[in-house]
Length: 290
Ligand SMILES: NC(=O)c1ccc[n+]([C@@H]2O[C@H](COP(=O)([O-])OP(=O)(O)OC[C@H]3O[C@@H](n4cnc5c(N)ncnc54)[C@H](OP(=O)(O)O)[C@@H]3O)[C@@H](O)[C@H]2O)c1
Image 1 (tube, rainbow, N blue to C red):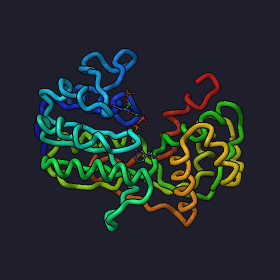
Image 2: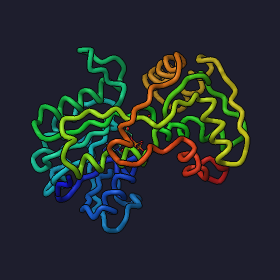
Image 3: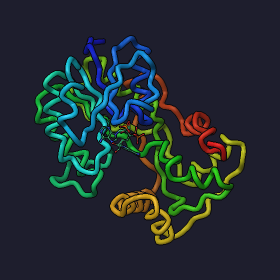
Image 4: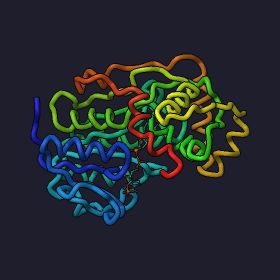
């Protein structure tokens, strides 16, 4: 059953998931306001009300939240310090928040381990405390991680040097996360739900690289390197805390096939998109000129 939430605020609107939340909402005739720290290069459709604001500076949101009926919230900050003040402002107007959280959270422990689980759990608590309608989307690894992890190497050549080739995950297409978000923003029946989202099939990292090779028409070779060698490589491009989380997660994922959920198809009514489909959608970004 559809419910009209009026104006929908989309945070992270210039990012991989948020862009699809915006376009899918527009396709359904919803009115959309998009938050960005820099409206100038936002590249969003003209019918979107693009506004400047920063989740790290809650004061910047006072005008942004006015008249908003529902919000898609994405939290890209290294801590949740400003979350209570942000949620407080949002819920002055928004009756409903759909939060892009993380599958790293464990509901059976009091204290989360790891920065990713901790930050997302703190934001979830701030939302629960606000007493409005909420839905938490807890996706497993994004398919777009492949671009982040291997994009530069694949644009340069045919070999991907990376650790834990046997690590398995069920990568989820960003369009599917967005599709679930839009259903939760627009329909009744998703309030108070925590949705564990995954792609349709478990694939090892080495298999994912092979699939990307097929999509770009150039066979790729996965060359396994040691976790220590990978640590040095990664520290050049990301903070130590994130490197630790990433390597820890990949090591754990070597235990066997990744579990998959059917939540995407149950909620959207369409099969979850495969990694092959994702690789075809993004093939151009793996080519040298990208
Ligand atoms: N990668 C995974 O495997 C995975 C798994 C589970 C959950 N997640 C969660 O998914 C989220 C990332 O989603 P994504 O890939 O769509 O993002 P993304 O492509 O990395 O884009 C980040 C977005 O966040 C916005 N942003 C960053 N800092 C901001 C701030 N201080 N104030 C307002 N907006 C800010 C950016 O907007 P502007 O630059 O325009 O301001 C941009 O739109 C993260 O919260 C992550 O924890 C990721």
